[in-house]
Amino acid sequence: MFHYLVTMGLFMLFMSLYTFVMNHSHLLNSLLSLEMMSVTIYFLIGVIFTFLGLELFYLLFFLVMVVCEGVLGLSLLIILVHSHGEDYSKSFNFIQC
Image (cartoon, rainbow, N blue to C red):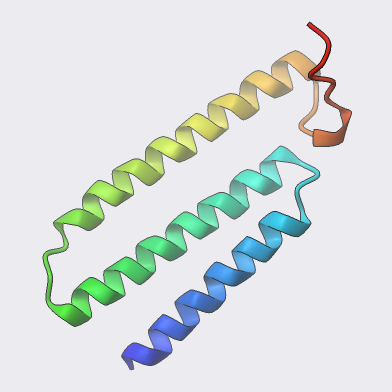
């Protein structure tokens, strides 16, 4: 059972990494892929900690960091859409002041 859960978690991690690499044209797609990677890592850490019989307190700390990362990404997305009007990455000109 443990091997199936770890295999499924690794598959989810690689699929989210593939999605992040291949669909980076919109910032929202990139943020969703990063969130999927974070949730998958959270799942894998939970499975491994449960299998080894370790404390699950560290999962709560990791979950707080994932939420902070998500909030920071969404706030950057809102600022970017407000200033540029869209989240299409290839239309940004960062050279201009």
